[in-house]
Amino acid sequence: MKTRWYKDAVVYQIYPRSFCDSDGDGIGDLRGIISKLDYIKELGVNAVWLSPIYKSPNDDNGYDISNYRDIMDEFGTMEDFNEMLKGMHDRGIKLIMDLVANHTSDEHEWFVRSRASKDNPYRDYYIWRKGRGKNGKKPPNNWTSRFGGSAWEYDDTTGEWYLHLFSKKQPDLNWENPAVRKEIADICNFWMDKGVDGFRCDVITYISKEEGLPNGKFNPIMCGDEHFVLGPKYHEYIHELNKNSWSKYDSYTVGESTGITYEKAPECIDEKREELDTIFGFEHMCTDMYMEVIPHKFRLPRFTKVLTKWQNLPSGCWNTLFLENHDQPRSLGRFTGDYGDKRYEAATMLAVAMQMQKGTPFVYQGQEIGMINCKFRDEDYLDVMARQVFAIAGKIPFGKAIARACLAKRARDHARTPMQWSACENAGFTTGKPWMMLNPSYKTINVEADKNAGDKSIFAFYKKLHAFRIGNDVIKCGDYRQIDGGNKDVFAYIRSYEGKTLAVICNFKNKQVNFPIPAEVSRGKLVLGNYKDSRIGQPLRPYEAAVYEIGK
Ligand code: NOJ
Image (cartoon, rainbow, N blue to C red; front, side, top):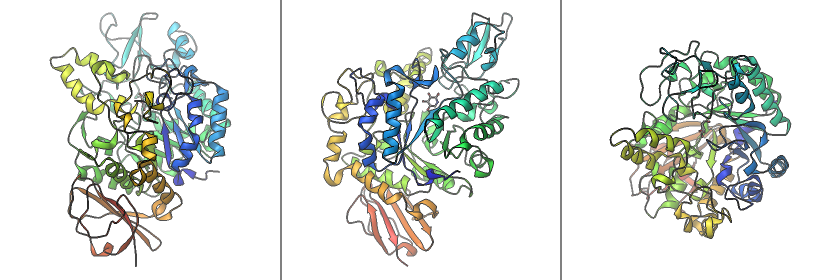
């Protein structure tokens, strides 16, 4: 029986490598997470999404899995996992694991066998093709890897190429093969039988490739998408996986769905289809980028137009709400402009703007204390994507400088610097040498300092927000309507349900602005806000965010 518990959930995402290290090897681990379960509980969330913790050679920090049924050495053991899961459940926290099923590591036993010869049962677990050109030395088509360069790698052993839409150490699985689909369902069942509550499904919309793997339309950065994003058998495969696994449990699934627009969303998440429960739509995250990677100016109206569109998903569909994850730079600055000494106001305003909407909110580790982007030198970037960008850019004139400028704003590394627990050595993250540089901001931005910041504590605000949100039917079920006060710096909307109405008003600028209030919301009681004395109709102070209960 599906209780659809996720509609009342706030999910906290943990990137385990950077969360908390318990044994001094400089890498976060499961016992580190266990030591912070009370912290997570205190934040008032009721679910955790854990980025991959399975065995992996870590070419892409765990998104390259070499054994789906075992724990990465650096992270601990299955006993640690069991204890962590119990610790979560004892505290009323559900656990969502990361299901990386579009590809495996090239060190997975399946691939080791697959590449060994053309005629073994595992050959067809992956996508092998002959090359083009006289000696077959050209890749089979022009598709590009999401990390840059060709999506094909030549393999000497059998003289054929394999497809990898990410790094060459992440070969794509061949979902056409029923044995592969069965393996994936079995893996899901393995973890759900242990008590896991759901999955975040990594690049799930890429699993079905068009027959014949035709060339993509010319695109120097991302070529081939039209042949594998929501490919021809995508729905068949997901429905089957739902039937063979997810539907047997009170589970929740959220699909990472790069490239899926609002118009396409219902075919992926409408309850009647019995596929995924929700997806992460990235349209709002692309409003300050060209071609999904090149930064351009953030404009609030463009951003809120997308959010508003997604608020109006047809009934039977459920939304997700997020501004950060391990692939995105930090939201402070990005969506707020220069916040100067108003970090508390800016961070809490973003929290209100997102979490008063309809859907399941996700908070990424560090967001709850207002962590910020980091300044990196070229050699500080560790992410496989950043390294690949530099390698490719280095071959073209001014390429490095352009890459540097893009990465300064966009690199995934920004979200991956270790969690800042205190101002102590290594931010209290580890007693050893951190696997990745710390953001020097930890001296002032850290959990301990934030919790001691009294009425300027971002953590305390999130806690209040979660307590207000969870179980509030107006937020969960209410209608949504954006209010147009004619000010392009303000995001305001009304939520209403069974005669109750909330008005949400957020100033995205670090300056005072006027926002003419429509008559219908001119009287109301302040129920949540980042300034204690907000009043409807007054000019909005820098990053002022307020939620009013509107009287009849
Ligand atoms: C999306 C994940 O979020 C990202 O971190 C990873 O690099 C790719 N998928 C490949 O698994």
